[in-house]
Amino acid sequence: MVALPETMMAIDPAGAGGPEILVPVTRPVPRPGPGEVLIRVAAAGVNRPDVVQRRGLYPPPAGESSILGLEVSGTVVAAGEGRGQALLGERVCALIGGGGYAEYAVAPAGQCLTVPAALSMVEAAAMPETLFTVWTNMFERAFAVEGDSVLVHGGTSGIGTMAIMLGKLFGLTMIVTCGSEEKCARARQIGADYAINYSEDDFVQAVAQITGGRGVHAVIDMVGGDYVPRNLQCLAEDGRHVTIAVQRGLSAEISLVDVMRRRLTLTGATLRPRSTEFKGLVADELERMVWPFVIEGKLKPVIDRTFPLAEAAAAHAHMESGDHVGKIVLTVG
Image (cartoon, rainbow, N blue to C red; front, side, top):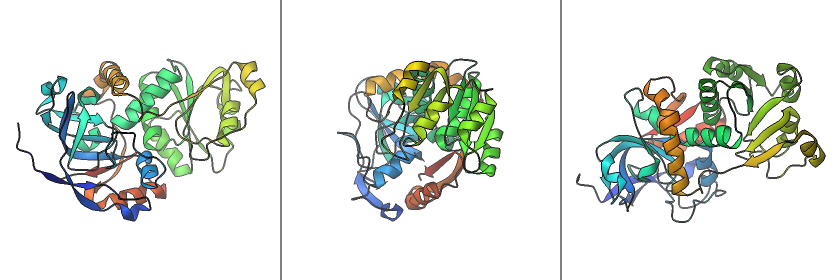
């Protein structure tokens, strides 16, 4: 086993606030328990839930680290009893419940995926959170299958860009919304079949025109609030609506008669509180169904910009500016 330091640099804010509270602090290096591995972090992805947690609105689940960060890449340097022993010395990326903005992070072994030569460590760090989220919601909850059309809001976000690329690999028609013509152009470059500028066009009317009035088979919604009834207008009969975030509000008023008449399905999910057993099953599915594309270099995340770990405040400010396309990543070491 590699000799480990006692302490490490981490971003572990003491309270809630703006990006300026994200300052480096010293924390003990965690130790892996049974079924876990310790990763010497090379890079950590920045995600919207990190911003919400920093604001004090999304506390980590019980037992998870208060250090920010839900995905990392790096090298496994220690392992507890169990399956993690086989990963010692391996380059991996991992979905974690917290603790990513640090020089070392603990991850359940079952939530690790080996990093192939086709991915840089920065790219690998940007994969788990969006990949797990898109896979479980677009394919397992929205039941999207080849030939389906899917509407995704936030087309140039980390989730949106991953949804576009994964959807195209599996034969979906991808329709996204973006806030500017420039972002619409980027979304189309990434692979979107259609990109709607919601600041100038009514996306409900645009979807109707694109689909010849039939509507889409599924909507992946990270907006919530007043978008929900408009999303339902975009759905075809037997359409599925999946809520994954609620940036415009926690509640919505919809017509239940319309839901019944068109046999719509409304569902939603949050990934972070799910069990390690569930996430391990998802990782196994991704390894079988998606990772071959990654190994072949056919699926890579869109990287917007990197920041050193110590500049996490600047990374969060950049995310909140809304100017980014794809993923923001912190580099470590």
